[in-house]
Image 1 (spheres, rainbow, N blue to C red):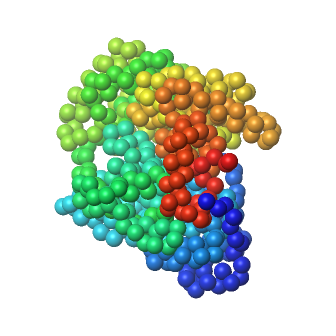
Image 2: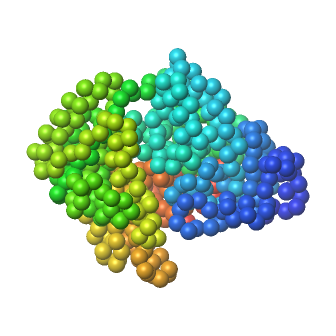
Length: 469
């Protein structure tokens, strides 16, 4: 698979302009700067041109041209990713699907919908909720991220604890191959045993195999009511044990989020914590959902009794929507709190639930061994914690060296705990050199062969997932 790409010359620009029109092609410096970044640290790779197709046919035409001329193409959603998956590291064309923004249909009786890849996730959720339906995947950037990125990364969020990640809701895809062919995978049906499951292969492939232009999605009836518990713990091990026990007891929470002591302290620097959370070693936020409010209260009381036996403090309970938002704010403020402290690198660690406490200790140890601070929080119900390694006042070069060493030490520990490199952010650009820690050589070779079968010229999202030779 070649990695030699041709530059975009004036003749190629003319042909792109003919395909995309005045509004669909940008080569000005502000656009190149904007589309050269995503939310991954401070990395910057400006493309030569930004393509903004408005139809799947235009996407296909751009890819036919790119294949003919061997131009690198980097697909992009909203650029909210945290692993560098949308960075145009090879220059060339950054192809954004943001103008493919139509919800084509919502079928309330069939509990399904079809939406183009440029639809904002939160907008889709609100549209289906107006019909009493529910699209569960809820990444933190839901009000800005696009379905394209969610599909490419198999995005998740707090509600994946009960409802699963994006891939669980994908029935069928419309996509463009690197050659420019427009394909359909899967079916609108709930069962499909017809040939290879290319739908699930493309979901989570990080834009390296095809450009997804639309998806048929499975929906659920919206739960009638929710209840939130915030439970403080004087010991990390007690909080981790509580996560195991909550699931063993069959409570099936919609979310189960954990914040350890350093995360709570950081949030306490940007907002007033509820008194019961001050100076605690850990906190669980548990959300229950269902059809009958009284039944949720009964389940909440049973959970409170269970965690009390493990040493938990008095839970805070909220059924009122405004009060639930106030409790959720403790968890949702963590991103702001970390940025308030320092530049940081986020590691998307995931282990079996039983190893949560060991994961936090491994993160603290890796950070301390390299003179850094670690802040841990995230989706305890999935064993998926985000470990933020903070730069503090370190000079840039020293920070980069210590960060990389700490991250590798952390992920070696994660693998030893039975975990892997990413729970929801993907491998992208920033994690690719670590991939051999998690994937054995024969499996990695097979993955490369899959990439070559879809993209023999290597023009689609080059430089991602696979480690440099």
